[in-house]
Each structure stands twice: as C-alpha cells, then as structure tokens.
Length: 171
Image 1: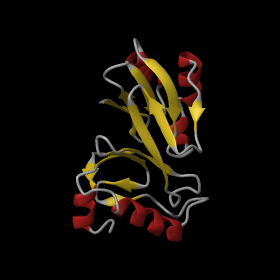
Image 2: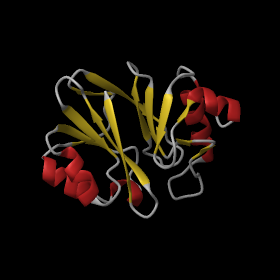
Image 3: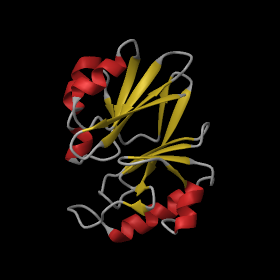
C-alpha cells in the first residue's frame, strides 16, 4: 500500500490517499480543505471511497469537491472497507467527537487516527459532542493494537503505538 499525505488548510490537516499497489484503487481519508491540492494527486487512480475520521470542518472542507470530481461514495458506519487487495477495519473511537472512528490496515500495521491520537497527545475533549470518558475508552482500545503499529494522525507527524505507550498517552 502506498500512502500519500497532503497537508491542507489553515490547521494543516493531514489528508491521506491510500493506494492499492496492484489495482491502482484508492481511498481518500479526511479531505480537509484545498481541493486544488488533493485532486491532482488523484489523477490516474480509481477512487473507490472517501472516508472521514470525524466531521469537524478541518477534515471535511474539500469533501464535496472530492466526491463530485471522483464519483466515489462517502463510506461510514461499516466494519470494513475494501479497495483492491487492501482492507481497512473501522474502529469506533468516540471521544474527540461522538462519531469518531479510526481506520486500521492490519496487513501493514497502519492506523489512520484522525484527531483521536497524535504524536505525544490525544484529541481535545472540550468541544461539542466530545467526551473525556469516551476518549479514555477509545485510547484503551487503541492500546491493544500491536506496538509496531504506525499511527497517522489528523495533524502533525506520525507516531507508533509503542511510542505513545512510552509517552504515557495511551496504555
């Protein structure tokens, strides 16, 4: 699986494009803003789905433009997302928002965490629909993933489950 990361918008949201190497099928995660930066990266790809980790403005700003340009459907509330030979497991992680999810590519130990987990910290829980209690439960769930799992967050640099356990962010 190839991962393209595009930083978009004032808050530098990480928009991820995941590409199945064999079929050229792809998914777009969190098209936060600046469709003009995202759409050229999709040329030549077969975009199967657009996915959201949550619906805050900085993660959905270019959603309509990406849906319109690709014809791909928005997927949510499913247990698994398959594109090409790749499968993402949907892990429900309310806390930052009541509808928060992460996408886990078990075959590669990749977690796309949105604003649930960052390098050295977790997402805010002082916003409408946030819940500190739910965040604690979500982080416990993520702590059960293999330590070598690479975490690709909604903002900032990647981290690992092992590193976040060492920091005390989870676990």
